[in-house]
Image (cartoon, rainbow, N blue to C red):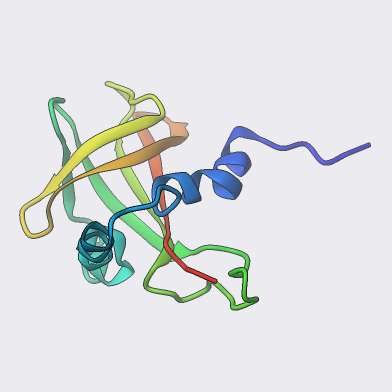
Length: 138
């Protein structure tokens, strides 16, 4: 009997590439994306507990975790601890719930970015959302 693959695991395996590096960019756009604090682990450093607004919604999410991705690059290097490969967990109210998709997020110091959020656990009055950044090249 084979291993069961959940929607969350499928996102971890394939979604990160599509969201944060799977689409070829012009050289200038690639440099701008690489410099964006939204796509660097260091952009979230010291921000645990801070609020991120969801554009067009009466909703704010709080940063609750920044962590390592499992696995290795094509060259066999670990993704752990990289500034260009990580996940972010945000927590907000259970309602209004966000479906999986791209949302505009804003932060007073980081500015605004459109990022792909995936719903996580829903417990009590709270819901979690995750985003994955994997810009690690071979």
